[in-house]
Every structure is written in C-alpha cells, then in structure tokens.
Length: 82
Image (tube, rainbow, N blue to C red; front, side, top):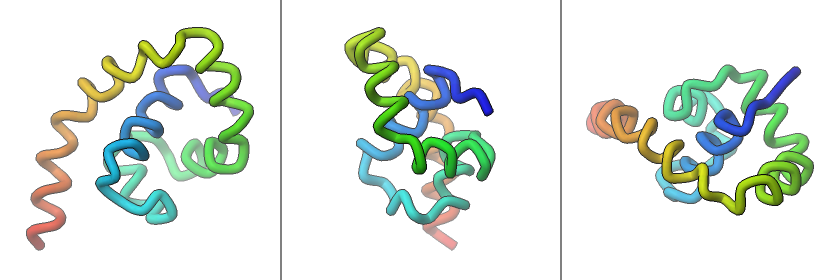
C-alpha cells in the first residue's frame, strides 16, 4: 500500500490538532478522508513515514494538509453536536 506525503500530512494534521484520540480510527478516517486501511498502515509504520517525509520537506507540507482539513472541521462540529 502506498501512503503519499499528502496522506501522511493529513493524518499528522489531525494528530497535532488534538481534536480526537487517534485510536478512534473511524473518526480519524472521516476527518482525513483516508481509508481505515490507510490509517492503520500509518499507525503501524508511523516512524517510517515520519522519517521519510519529515526529511523530505521539513514539515512544510502540513500547512496544505491543514488547509484541506478546514472543511472537515465543520463536519466534526456537527458530529460532536449529535
């Protein structure tokens, strides 16, 4: 399975936001747009992806990932309200 830099950045953006427990995989999937399989792959191999993408970009890609998550934050607010 391929995890792109953008996939990883979306996962990290949710993680760093503190918006949810990352073990709540179903919610993480909804917030990131990743599949359950992708989320679990990132969780299992987090160190590998962090090393690979952090070295490549110095985490500059997080801004674009956070930007793509802004619309999903509204969805989360609706979920939390229910």
